[in-house]
Length: 615
Image (cartoon, rainbow, N blue to C red; front, side, top):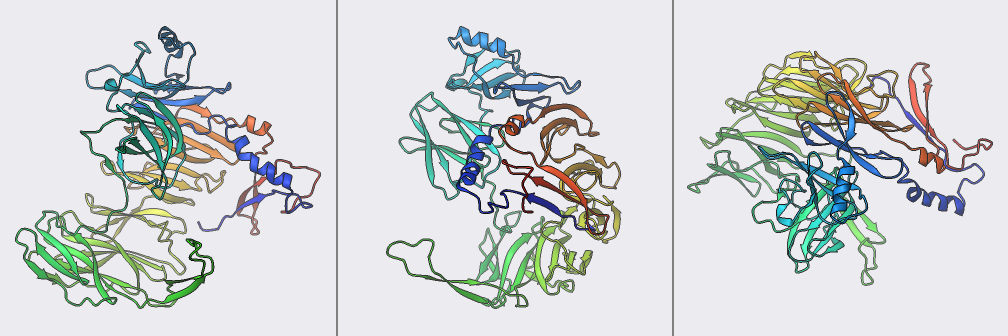
């Protein structure tokens, strides 16, 4: 933004006379999370789309129970997704007298068949199913469980971070006992349940946490990642399906050409081109020197005739030595301080200097590139070939981060052209405010820039570098591009500061055409937003909140942003009754007398209006 806006958070946690806090203060503070976590109703409502026209969500009721609801997409009418009275009557016929709560459900609809709803019941083992009209209640036998439901197996051996709270329900459909194990971030396993055949277990967890099902005889039946929506794990043999690959970063570059004819090998830092069929080898470079010059990263042209690598001139390493007086992994036998040595480049030191190099695989020769756009390099990345193999692009980041260049290299001649150049007298936020999207089908580039003083998007010709139009403009900023539709040229954006009556740090969503027309706000509530789209993209759920407003969830139409219905409004009245003081927002002018400074005041639970507090 043109003028910095500061958020002032006044966290008044203790009184002036007891600045260090008493034992009672600490005991009270330690008890707060346990006392308060469950005191906000409908704090985490999420819409699930069982079919493109069948949204459902779980709604917390005032009596502490919950129900699943659905929405008529035309009228916005909200009704129970399941006729629980009818289901309860059928349960009584099967000997279940109480009316248990539905804790999870899904829907299956095969071609030519009616919709089947599959669900779990609190306190009841196994999976249940009913028809769409809530008739035909039955407990599913192992062989009747639809293959479409349940979390997919993944190839991973550990949890990957942790997102929002969620849950998983595991059903042992195997013919021997199984253990349900959590895998921590180091791959260590901890058993949370042992299930006999037919038994089930519900487990609270966090998104992206990994869970393993293993038989007591030691056979792993599968590893599963928890998702934001509560999931089901069917523990059984998997003879026909392959586990999904865990989405981890892949090594840069593919050394084998797209047609499979050639392979690039690195030998002592040099490049050797190998004919895969005949194993004939051609040494393409011979100037690599250990710790001084080496070749890395391969990007093949789509037609397999050429490839790009990077030639890196390594800078001398400056080593720093420190002594760790109490080593982390010390044992009774290793109590002595430990010497630690690591690479630490200081300002002004030489750094590695990469440059792209181009090779003709068909004729086994190097094509000289015009590297005049390259100076003192911080990084060269985003190497990307044109689909017709006529050229490749790269993003050059100059040391000091005051110059960014998008460069196009002619694959036949090696001629280079600067397509986009971004300069600043101060600093370019290359890590979080750079968006480069090369639209080869249009021969255009979408580029993010703060050149106007606000972070916006621009469209350029990908061959000449001529700016075609600004896609967004105004006294507000684009936070990120969430999606681009190649068929329509429609972009979906995260933006900030658009509504001048709201906190400029609130995240909102909008859509706009690539020519800058058709700008449409998708969110309007006063708060920071998070949206999720229906499978066909026609609708989205909008969840927003503020420090002084519990979450509100709405369903909206993508075409014009209009609201279908308000699905839920968070209720923290019980939390307030327990002694919590909601934050109080304020807006004050900066010393220029014009700039709004947004902040909030958080009072302690034992706030005394007659006492003075430090600020």
